[in-house]
Length: 363
Image (cartoon, rainbow, N blue to C red; front, top):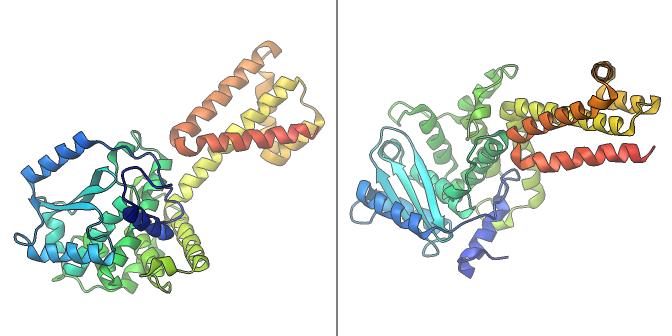
């Protein structure tokens, strides 16, 4: 169904780009238009930064025009580009409506990159707009692992848009390396193979601080984009073989899990298992009898050590108090899981509860 306030030709463009969205980049349908905030941002940028134009910044204007042409979105959306003074290497896309966005670049970023590298960054930021990542009102008010995993997946998607915008893989990868190192061309001789070998020196036994980052490690992003560029017809992405893309996405998902998300997924699994244990225990208490058959199922799911701990827990309370204590444990385990994984909590809870109910229905 077309989104509100988006012309048909714009909606068609958006639909085409869906073909290259990374699977873990879950599309949001909660866009909210805010004309007041849009006008406030427009005024702020005009007052505090330089708008890219053909007269004032001809080389940068040439880059933005090239990107809009390569992405086939010229004259489709109202897109405004700005440069602001900063020592930080940054770029950002912000929008408060479905057909207009503002993209701003720090002066340090612009000075660091050559034309094709800058085209990649422009395309990357436009990818956030085209794929619906841009509305600040949709951002999580509280950072949690679900939101971080989603944020990292978005970066994989928009790197692909950046490649299509630049149409120069080496420039895309060199832009990433420059951004991570802060070094310009005078000090860098880009060697992608050597850069990617840094992955083999990562100690996977040590939890990385990347699990708290909104972006995947640059090494993972570079390898993901390199793989994507190897697809036939990646520039005409509507013609990409879906099986090849699925296989590629699975490789990237495995890469992300290996180098970033493994500890998060373990944490999620442990929290889910804890919830499952207490929901199972609640069923037992409601039945009023922990039969040999139920104990057998308990061991199959949780193991003998957990059975001993659970039976010891039961022995601490009277029949009158045990249900209340079990309820507390269910609430505690639910709260911890929901706090860290709020977006997936509901589906996890339903799945766990259904599995437990199915076990007891067999009795």
